[in-house]
Length: 260
Image (cartoon, rainbow, N blue to C red; front, side, top):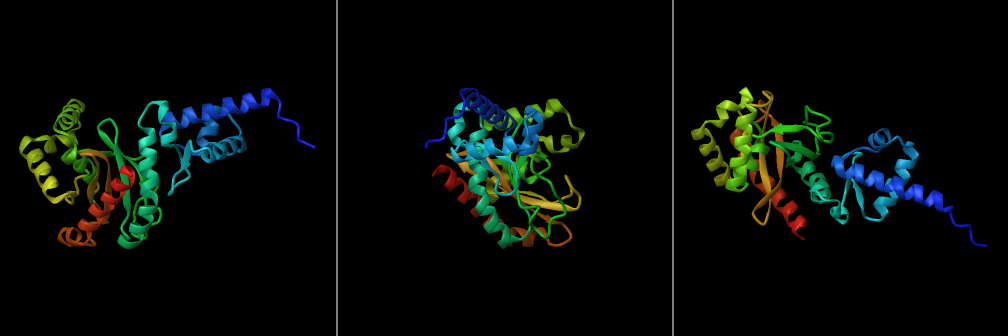
């Protein structure tokens, strides 16, 4: 005998809850099931069940490096850049696993958001050389991190000017030195010439340094890949000679995957 179809009211309730979850994930960019349950007032088992359904249908995807879920390109009609970021993270996940094991030092993938670079994927939790944890969602300053410098170095002139004007209006005292015209010009020129940006003078976190390469799609910066190391462990020259090319290669593979 065929099983009776679920009552219409139950189907409608499930659909309504699923759409609410999808809207919430899209609005947040990335979130954990427990956070969704708390925000929407739903039981956790219900949220997990509906997320599994949405994942099977291709509308959401779980992060490769954390228990966070994002919308996919299939949900791009929801109207923001969340789907692009989700695609970027899905492509970066397995590449981070590969390069993270080879480079050992922790890697971050970050995207631009309102005068900061926001970490979306990371290997900090898996790297034995990391001194940081829980970095996903962390906002990085534009002028004092390699990710921000890489973005400024490779984004369009008009966008760069808008970002810099925004930073001047914000007036963070820590940024003032780096907003000096001659420093900006030198930083942008050196970044573009090298193909990646550098932070190695303790200007953000005194214990660490980093390099970052842009993920370029048709000349636009979709995100930046960074490698972080402990300053006392290696010289900058050794890092540039040993890790510069692999980091640029990693960014290129992420870009190729996104373009495909």
